[in-house]
Image 1 (cartoon, one colour):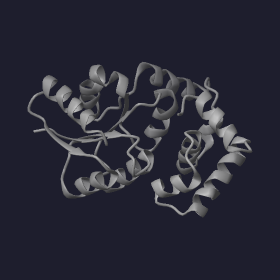
Image 2: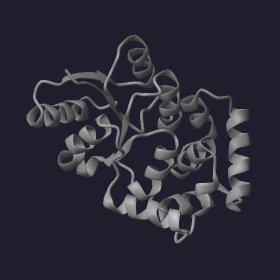
Image 3: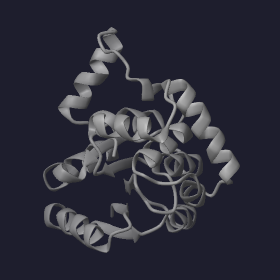
Length: 209
């Protein structure tokens, strides 16, 4: 029996995803997790065939959590589910070890196909992301400034762009205010920005909010 763990902080989303799975491939065992700590506990304590992971859990950055999951279970295929645009997050998620990326808007149509693909050892991305990957391989794609940021710096960029204070980000990431301030300074330098207002404009302009 295929065992899939769904990690999302919204119960209604977890129910909806489980319904999609059971309607199309009845018989799979579906587990649930609502927090990053719960995800890591279940990954340690049980064996799963595949995971669906929301990239925006409230208590941990999704990319950092993905890296931790892959360290614990390197062979576990993780399918990222996100409300964010694929063009902005899919490439970074794949580099962190994700087996695929599905937007929440298209989950009802793509989820089961994506799960089957990654269960068979493949990768799942949309046609648009596949085209971007091809362009990068051929040297036809020009990178955007935020692609040069580390995962932590990128998280701080997005958080500040959403109007969060440094202290709020520190609490969410489990880091000190001083450490987050250091990431902010590095991010601003790499992005050639001076103020949080510059960050907000960039995040909105690039659909990262």
